[in-house]
Amino acid sequence: MKFTNLLGMSAALSLLAPTALPAQTVNETPVPNVGLDMPDGLTLFGNDDPNVRRATAVVNGSIITGTDVDQRMALIVAANGGNIPDAEKQRLRLQVLRNLIDETLQIQEAAANDISISADEIGQTYARVAQQNGQGSAAAFDQYLRSIGSAPASLHRQIQAELAWSRLLRRNISPFINVSDDEVQSIIDRLNESKGTTEYRLGEIYLAATPENEAQVVAQARNIVKQISEGGSFVAYARQFSEASTAAVGGDLGWVRPAQLPTSLAEAAQQMQPNQLVGPIQSPGGVSILYLIDKRQILTADPRDAQLSLKQISIKFPANASQAAAQPILDRFAQETQDIRGCGNADDIAATLNADVVNRDGVRLGDLPGPLQEVMAKLEIGRSTPPYGSLEEGVRVFVLCGRDDAQVGNAPSFDQIQSRLEEDRVSRRAQIYLRDLRRDAIIDYN
Image (cartoon, rainbow, N blue to C red; front, side, top):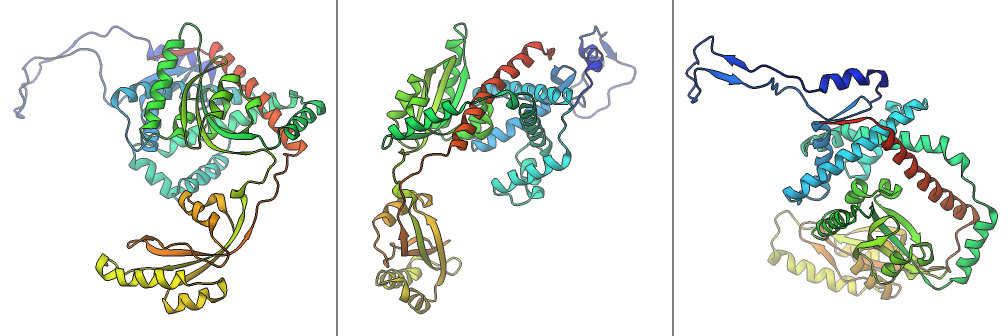
């Protein structure tokens, strides 16, 4: 996140072993006059070749270089807007190195089980990541990564490790995970009993701790909370720091009920509001940082699930238009659109304003920006929102043409619950699997 022949491990380690090098004295020719204060007798201690990329760690013969760490660090810095203090960067580098070691172990274990990931598979996933990050194409994403000091190869490595590890777990662990029908039915019964109570969609960063290092881990968790509170990306920190399997999805636990959480986490979640960050919280085997993404009522209709039919009416202004020049147009636009009495005449009014009209059906109320949700939730059919936008991006209104209110929520299906239980058990087994790989690995730090 290098397939390496483990038989070559001894040779790799011997190349990195320290050797006694005699001091090299350079005094055969006079020092040229280059404007530098250099002595006639220049002594070089050791053999320091700047073109050699030194290994930061050698994992069962596979080399992780400082360049690998730098390129992965660049992704984290970019995800946090570059707002990371120097002291925090040093700690991040250590975590990145640990992540790279885990990725190397995952790729090696997959290879030992005859699992390989093709370049085409990596390329397809890379292209999807590029689109998800708003880069459009893989080529554009390549350019972006280089511009921030990273490289496509760094992300290719992470993708390779995640795909290889996932495939390995599906082969070696998933077939041996059993969830009985009685377990699933028990959860369905508890869901029905909990109808109307609240469930939470949570993000978690989990850090394992022992009694010996608990104080250090708690300090690390507090530092992460501080960085996220100051504008850092929760998803980026979860991917790099969380030791739970949900790290791969940015720490997203999905929708959970308090009864499904450890007591300390359940109590914290019940006191939180959406977009709130809390931690560190003591949890079994370590500490957790929680981020409340959303909450809703179990098996009850959520007003935010209402489906809307909308017309968007928008106008644009000439480049560099002044506020004074645009104000009369804005005033007329606001007056005319507020007089709309149904979608039937919205197109005619838009034509008199020389405005563009776009029909949007099946828009979920909860997917709209927060302030617009509040307006739309109270809006009558056939009326328009107040104008919003800017001189640069244009001004627009939405006309509400129809609303299909949310239906009573349905319980997750038997298969969905069974799948979730299986995923949880695979996740726990995967943590043990990776812990054993770390324990058995031969790792030489530079």
